Amino acid sequence: MRCAIILLGSFAAMVVSAQQTALDSGQGGRNSQCIASFPIPGYPGLARRARLVGTLTVVVSLDQDGKIRRIAAQAHLNNDRAQSALLTPIENAIRKSDFLPSCGGKDVTLTFEFRINGDPYDRQQEEVTFGYPSHFTISARPPIPTNSQ
Image 1 (cartoon, rainbow, N blue to C red):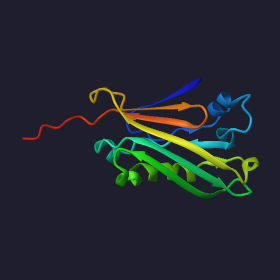
Image 2: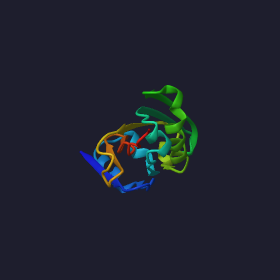
Image 3: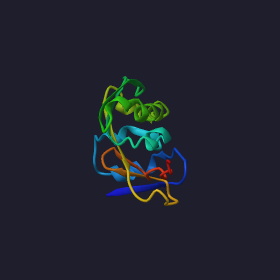
């Protein structure tokens, strides 16, 4: 089952809480059940203009109280030197997130897939979809081409 969240323009955050819980019902012990709220990051403008795409797998280690102890990431991008362009907004979103105290001491794995596709002239600039269990796909339209002479 997939839950689609449409983001228009440069709107960069939306909180996922009840939607995730609904997706997780009956699936005990999954990563996304540890997330009380999560502001979904948008596609960074600089990364979009540079056409940076790929997948970031982020592991959030929680302390015994469910507070963030450490964030580690593994990147599979078309330009690994530009990892921080996508990782920084994800880390910022994770630091603003709330994790359930009952998940204290656990590692929570989140996967973020960044894609650029579609018509650059489409009015809808960005789309975020959530796939079970904790997979976010953030798609943006390519930048409008400029005439270089």
